[in-house]
View: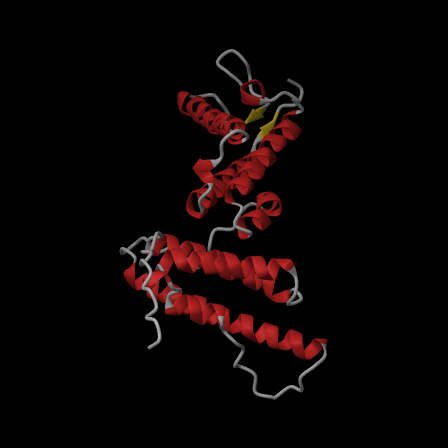
Length: 259
């Protein structure tokens, strides 16, 4: 008599429906804008698939230690949308079948988003026009994030925004010294100015921005030694959105280089 397969422990979901929607929309966006246009053997294709599989495991869990049926359907999807049978062999045939497979995967991910929308608390579902990271942050951190290297993605984003403060201000120092000189103090006018500073509210706004940038500088220094805090897809992406906001604030700031 054949030995009965030992049942493994069920791994429950670790992402809420809202978080799951957010991550799936990001993966769909990466598929549409980058992955689907790549050759099927490009490393980014494999990285995207692995990251998406990991996200689906976190959304749906792993019953009895196995992949959930939705995760399995995504992973083993095959393009069944073509109407003309293509002869096997050759690059065009292989690439066409790859594109059809990715189109089917995209359809599955959108279907999973709809399922999660029914489960998410009312008002918590993100808008379909998903938040796009600042282009410079996506350039340095996007590939790392999609590869599952979340803490490294956060670290590189921190370095990028600090470098942008240096470039905009012309100040080559680091840490709190850089931020205080760039954004000013009670006794020093800022080189990078976000408001007119004529009212108490405007001065408070400038001070709040200083605290945000100072926080980035301090976190960057601590992450060089210990990065466990952001070794998680949800926290890492939220941090990337914060850094993207700071990059966009720098774009609209007044620069007082003469100071």
